[in-house]
Each structure stands twice: as structure tokens, then as C-alpha cells.
Length: 264
Image (cartoon, rainbow, N blue to C red; front, side, top):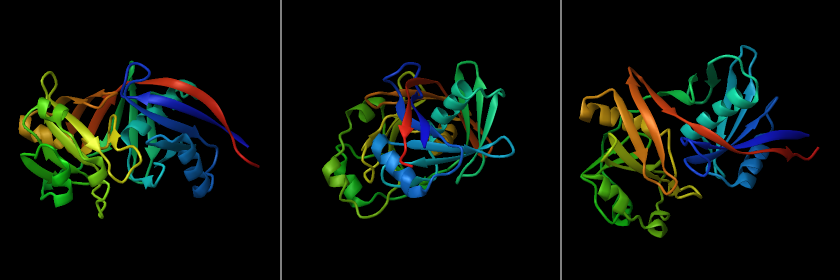
């Protein structure tokens, strides 16, 4: 049995930018062990799988090479890009059923807009092993699913060095570690680290903005914000706060189309 596969660069207007995700449309669910093997073979930060539902929705799941995730922004954007551009989908809005509840993606010109749940961080303290791994200490520490570490400037974020070898020794699951500061030309910038994942620094992290958007919205007294993730590949997100939801708008490009030759 064969199944199509796409590799999409999400949150970018060109290939080799943004965050790459594999997307596998399925007619029905394969065994979880096989989904994990496909993900590990892809060797990307995330592989998304979806199946059509009877009511026109799609059931969407996300896997890293280690675990199944509860939410992933760039792989959701990539999945929507495939549905809109490769599967002859005739509407301008897609509804995904997921472990994080219903997720909407709307096509607006060349952009795709994600409708995600808000995750408001609360003030916290930083585990000593995380603090020891940072070349610059944060001004404030916050926590939702991820740690949100506030810095003074974009230059601090660019100049920050993280001791990967030390941080990978952490014996708790910290979620992700987001470092953020006011941007020079955008409202805020960030970087995102996952010590429990094979890819240590994520290029562009949509799910982290579920916390970053309400965090910066309150500080800047704005509900519409522009964000930039300062990874090597980099990416831009156009963000809005809408009640208990956040809207993330970005572009995507297809890098690869292929077919997985699954064993019978």
C-alpha cells in the first residue's frame, strides 16, 4: 500500500526558509507504531497525518521522532497548505479535529490563518539546570506548557548561547523553552529550544505563540502583533488575540512531493 507524502516549508514565502514539516494524507488511520516509523524515517521535527471525516472535517495528528504532540503550529499550516493546494479542496476554511480541540485554518490570499487556543503563561521560577545552560539570564520567568523567558532586547536573543549538552541532562519535561524580547522592526522576537527532542532549536514554532501572543498583547496593549523567530532559517508570524483564541497568519511553500512505499 502506498501513500502520498509532502514536505512543506511553513511560515516562509520561499523554500529553504521557515520550518519544514512532512505531511501524509491518509484514507484511514494506520497503526500508531507505523506512524512513528514513518515519522522517524522522515527525520524532521514534525510529521503530520490526517484522515477525512464524514462531515467534511479532517482528523489531524502530529508526531515528532520521539512522541505524539498535543499541538503543532507549523505542521498544521503545512497540512492546510496540502489540502488547499494538492487535494482540490473547494472551500476557504478547513476544520481539523485534534487532541487540542477543533482548529480552523482559513485561506486569505497567499496566507493561511490558524485559529488556535490561547495559553496564558504565569510567573514561575526557572529550574537551576536551565539557568546554568543560558549564557544570559532572563529578566523574568513565565510558564504555560513552555517556559517563557523574557529578555531586554533583540540583541540578547541573537547573542544568547545555550549549552545543549548540559540542558539535555534535564530530568523533567519542561515543555519547550522560549526566549523572547521586544523586536527591532517587529513587536517581538523569539527562539525556541526543546531539550527532549532530536532537533534542539526549532526554526519556527506556531504553538509557542499560543503563549507569546497573550504575553506580549498585555505588555504592549495591542491585539494585533508582528513576530519574528530568530532561528537560522527564520520565519515571520502575523498574530492577533481574539478572546480565548489566537490567530496566526503565515505563508508556506512546497519543497517535495512523493510517495511512501508501505509494506503490504
